[in-house]
Image (spheres, one colour):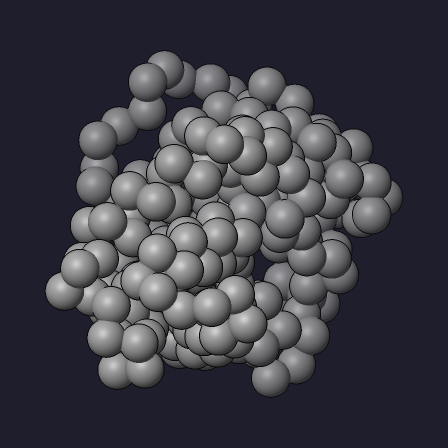
Length: 234
């Protein structure tokens, strides 16, 4: 019997590509208006510094907010700002980045789907991103939310899946994971014994077939997947 579902967020409940384009450009442009650093340190350098920070702090490689702030502080310091000013502007740039990051447009079907599922199942969110889903939804629909990067255990690490199921009080065989990444969502969930509703947006096809793997092209197809899983277990 299926008792709960765990959800990835980015590119599962909304299209995250346009969000990140606006976020990347918007907060770096804002910071340049304050510090005038971008000619010397273009966006490509900012990305390089984030990757370098991930190498220096491997345990925090999935904590994207930390990596961004670290890179911004380094850039501002090298640009000649003292520590206090570099810290202030880095913090304000991150705050603005997070504001832009949360300006998402849910797929038309996402909110009605979650509201309906909430009546019948436990729900959890597991994300490697730095979105706070409570800033997006007007009412709380998830029983627990795990920001895996901040936990220092980004997907495909099994610990975040296990923590979500522990909080939901369900076994893997009673839980469906819904996500768009083959490596970060489908594979780890299958290995744990969960059912998987994999969103194959590009219709590339799974690397292999599995009785607990169900392929979709959009989250709107999830009710049909749940129905198939329930019928197969009857």
